[in-house]
Image (cartoon, rainbow, N blue to C red; front, top):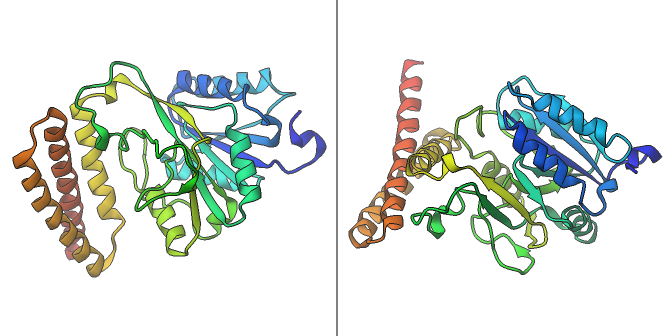
Length: 313
């Protein structure tokens, strides 16, 4: 029985943002039913202006489990993943927030792992875990290890540890204390909007946490399976993904100093890519270098546009 029946604050708020994926969302919602300790959670589905039958899918689910699961449906009319996430955050009642993609299937102990970790580790402000792919079609031969992160495939091993280097939890499977958002909500100029591939909002937020010295934990038992549709398993899609990432990287930089640092890093990347292209032989490695150049093209496009807008006043 949901904790609301006892007038208690839920231990965790599960936020699922969705846009025009009613069929996949239905599978994700049904997967919640088998989770251990589901009664500790509230579920908030934020519909980001879907034009399919998303609303009816959620309402049917709510009606089917009205006595068992605390589920709310919220329509967010402002297009964009960041806007939808922020709406979910503001509506949440728990001091712990967990984000789950509308095409992800959490493991049975997902809630238990999140709640127990935050309760036993007061130093941890955010956490994430494994994300295994469910490919709709055969995995392409060119999808080598460096491409896994753009496809949200994450496996950092079977040991609990701090996220290494510049890595951080992915939006398909991440949780944090609500106090994180005392610093800032997700920036509305970053993140997916409709069918666009812009991103960067997660990296920006976790970058703020890292600057303040907060602990961000990887936990292998916080695991989900994540659907990868066939239309994304193409060279055209992954090149667009890198181009959009390049734009996102430029959008995160501000001021003359920020742009100069970005241009310096971009120049170094070009030198590296050109050198690596000479020795690359495999199909995957050649495509990777093409994608990296697309990322650079996206970055330079954004910097150039920013300069033109600035000159125009």
